[in-house]
Image (cartoon, rainbow, N blue to C red; front, side):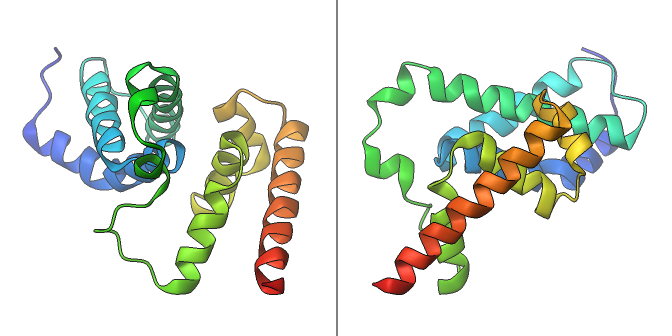
Length: 162
């Protein structure tokens, strides 16, 4: 393990911990799994030389979080959890009703579309940058964003009809 100061560890986790948790949770829909992923991501980070720039550090954290989330989703232990535990947001995370509607609609989207929307709207990445992070072409990212927006529109229209 490299010699990293406690201050550096606290600083990096303070800046990026919430982002890593949000990405893990939006992919797994399980708080405990997300917390495990956060620990694994930061452990992996601190066992290697830190990226030189903030941009590379953030991109590395996003990429590794998405990969670890996919690994958890594919794992056998995940398949034994009751379905309602994986879908329902943790009760300790309070959301206003409108935000809760958005939250539920996002979980209805496929994982790649959810990740593209999150990175575009919340983290402010361009389609080209998202393409690098998700290992897709820029055009493929535009298609993901377009499909995600259409799906959300359909979901919200159906909710308005009820």
